[in-house]
Length: 289
Image (cartoon, rainbow, N blue to C red):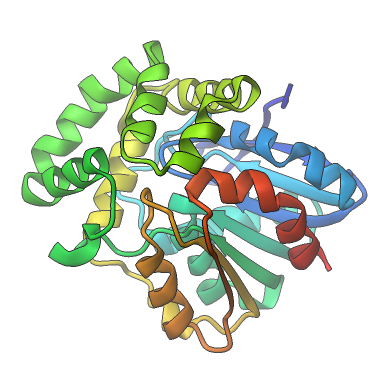
């Protein structure tokens, strides 16, 4: 069980976070995927303990038990991270962004480089604003993205009022959607009972407050970003599965090409979820070293 902990921010909002691993270990702040929450840490719990890493995951605004933040931008996230780090007395730390958390990790590398030791980007999503951005994605994800781009106001309303509450009540739907467009190796991961349970719990908790948090993330991913990854000046490591159909490998290659000095590893025969499960230890070892 990952106990929720809370930090009250200067504007009165509540930031919820959890942690796993070694309390005295090397700190890594974890930026969770989309749509997900701090409970994603369960996927990393064993590796964090074995690698003596303190892995800390805040719920982004509107997810889990963190209060919604109207009008937030990608570039606002580093301010939340700094406040959390100060609250925990962390002077310097690594940042790990997974899937939809990738842009948020990049934002930290741009805005607060003096606090960060290394950045890790695992299957990190790229900008979804362009028409070609969905090339290589599974069918359900393509439809979500195209709808969000073509009818942004309607997409916000439907995701907030319909999709979010439905997913909270029936979290298995989210897993079914992921499996629909996934390669066989990710099918196997999502069918494994323990892992499926983690994904279900994270999905249910992500939509605890409805769909506003996820709807706003989708809005940010499909609009022009207010961060430029080419300006990251922190040591950056990137991992991406070549068979990933949730976040196509082309996005990882684009990130690797534009981030100066990026150490990138593209793994053959790995998908989106299989990479997380099979390489968690190596990823944490690299970032915590």
